[in-house]
Length: 94
Image (cartoon, rainbow, N blue to C red; front, top):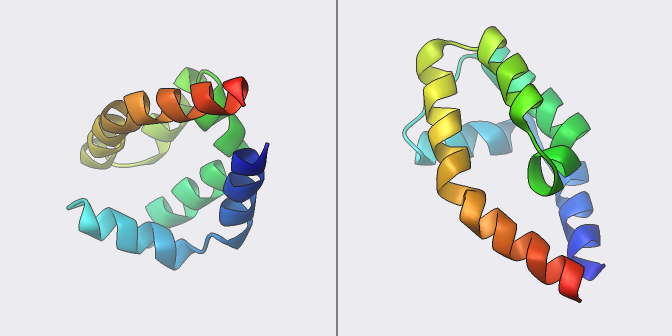
């Protein structure tokens, strides 16, 4: 349960500038509107993104951002999916 609390606290403190910095480190340049969209989806849907099936959320985001941005978001999600699954499995076991 401590891990869930830590994630919740991180998301509560998340700023739009954090999203922009992370994107830049990943080679993604976001415009202001895309930063706003991604920020809102993370703030309101992080539990589904981490613990559930984010397919519908990703499809919604796809309609709202540039195709190249969505492609990079999708690639990052796939890249981190195994890490997320391992993390959530450890949470469930503890």
